[in-house]
Image (cartoon, rainbow, N blue to C red; front, side, top):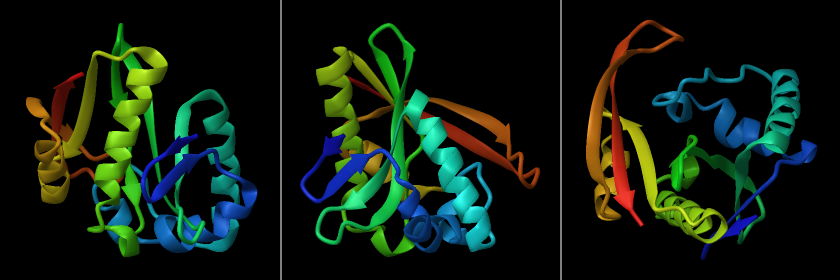
Length: 169
């Protein structure tokens, strides 16, 4: 579990399927900069939460809960990519929870977690070039851009630029 001022990052429970479906998985705006496709119905959301729970057992990934309401409002995680080097493993918030400073809290919480748990020395943050809010977030936290890679989106074949930012800890 990771705790910030307004959020708790914790492992998913089956009962979270409905909030994740309504707040995140069914929202085209949430999937806009992500590699996943929206979930079309509640039955698929129940299957997705089961897959999420299984994945989280083996990975440092979490659902994001708003402290004040207890609602599941997104997801985030980290992964090791080298000795003392970690990266975020995808961060997404529901549209009603964007532009409230929660993204910044999540990134700061993940960085702190990696420093405390793994003695991380470097943290990598990635985003798509068209995601201006995400780029501004990285810059506000002192990250430096280290690469721009042209990629093709698997779900629709569109080209995009994948940016990576580094922060030495």
